[in-house]
Image (cartoon, rainbow, N blue to C red; front, side, top):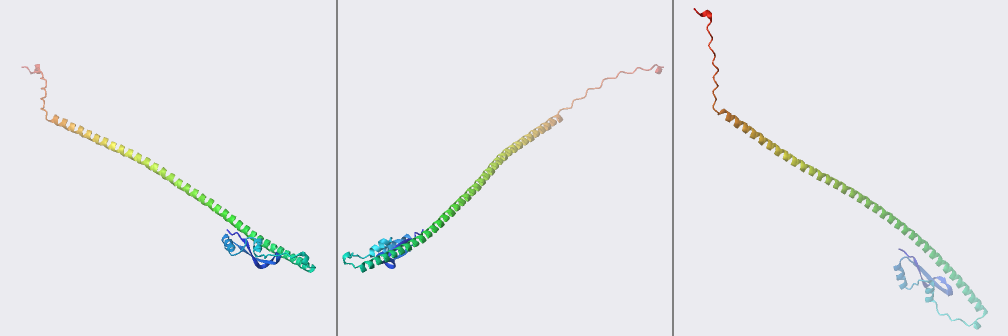
Length: 214
């Protein structure tokens, strides 16, 4: 994220109090600040002017003429005006830097909100996918249980069918045994000796009619 920090160096093209001059530059990133600081730039205007300010020996008031005092006062006033102008320039620069920083902050906050909205949307999609997966798993379990129940019923039906087949076979065997018994009984009845029928009872002789006598 940009920091837009101002650095100063003296001398330069802008007037400063005490007859000094300075330049300034805006460092957008911290690495630029570090590089410029190593190159002789200062973090404050006072620091930059302090590095370049020569030693001033105050003149003795008794040795100064009224013209010198007037000239010195004019120079002081001009230096103060220059300092005010420099301060106003710095203020304007700081204001622009502040506005730029506020815009960047607003953009960053908007990006954070967008990212949060994207995260919420992604979580919603994950929850929806989880619900679909859970529903599919439930359907699979239901179908598996239904298949197992059908398999149990099929196994029971197969056992019942096998038992019924065994019963049919047993019934056939019993019918075969009955038929064999019948055949054996019939054969036994055909080979037994025949018994003679009892003689019919004797009939009594009829008496002769009187008409037949002579």
